[in-house]
Length: 205
Ligand code: FES
Image (cartoon, rainbow, N blue to C red):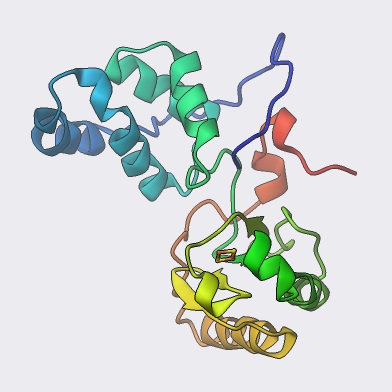
């Protein structure tokens, strides 16, 4: 998630043998992404998107690999990825329930929607269910103020959300998953989510 700051001195980076920036992604980037930019650095964000799309999130190892590929310092890749909300710096669930918390939705009682989602999932905002199925977050304005309170359930907009509609949406996804039709937009690295977290990203006790 964005807006996480911490003292990184002495941090150990979890690594896996296989790269996140795979030869396939590199080849795709060289052919289809880099030619669009005058400077190689311009491709940083789209290449981060490619890696996140494949891995589901952006671990430190991935940020380092992309930084080296693009030719920027790892800290620059980190600065970029941590600035934008669409980049995930910790694993997320198969499904992401995102409730808008900005002013229009706040006035229209987004809190009741968040409360219902928390109760239904048994987690707090920012957490992922133990089975890796759902992550619950709150975001700033989704640009759907006319339908406040607004939510995104995976890629689907939910306008005029209520505790009942968010609960139904979660039930529907669970039912679809149990029938083997998981449609989550983020179907990667679901197992052992907590173990996969970077030290700074572990949920507060
Ligand atoms: S304030 Fe919630 S969508 Fe704009």
